Image (cartoon, rainbow, N blue to C red):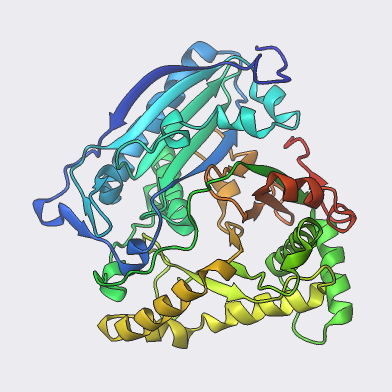
Length: 441
């Protein structure tokens, strides 16, 4: 067993192998060129590292446990890639994937400490980033759609980092892929939900569309911090909001997102008085699956940037922001999705792109959520994960939400400028409902 780790100088992550994992069966010639949808076309090409942490309960026979786990991961991944054939290809340009079966870039490492020690403290960003492939941290590795780093700790525990290219994969696609991969690893073929790659038939690409995603690579140094809202604190926040509202009960996402939005606005006001009264909107990344009969097993980008609006002020009301979030989510309705589907949706998309391009500077803060995706049920056959972490490498003014292991809580990873973070993370209102980077275990 490794020693307890307190900083990055003591933790060593050593690469033991790099390879491409190929699909078990080749992709048919008729599927070799995959045409991206308009929703893929307008996405930035960056990697999003998503991390699952698994404890090892069998420490008596590490000499066989570690190679056995490695073998199962590779074999089941190869089988899964046959069904997810674009993942084993390369991004050709903004419009196509070359499904050439070159495979997923796969790295295996050894870490010189136990996973219990790592998770028993509050791991900082530098330590977590050591578990992310360098190819995703520094310069994107060619045009791979998926890069995987399997970090095996001295105890046999695993931190599985899957870096997905947002050019084609969104959070729901990751969840679908991981559910099928874990089912294949367990030999549970009956639980596999085969993906559909028919998104381009609903949202065909528009080569003349100039709109690009308003989220871009950061050009300034930023700070990320993790905040955990437990179930009881969220219940208190919802109760507080209900006292002030006569509308429908608010969701976990709505009350937490509104509080974060409010506290970030207060930090922005303290830094710059001249910005008072200017737009300080919240871009809510909204899933289109399930709306207007869009199937839930569709793989690809099926998200829309809804916009909740407000003016920058230190006196924003939580209830008002919750209502704004409800309103913008409601606007992405069955009728809206119907209006942008198919060739008939091209004029509508062109008009929306023109509007968004003109108002892009007001898209100040973005939020996405991977809650309610069953990520804590992803079992390769050696138990469910004890922690899921959404790692942000490139985006500033960005919030990601996910479930806690207990299920009723929410973890938020917030990325702001260093000056804003110094104010935001000490906000008494925020700290009344959340804990700053507590130990995952």
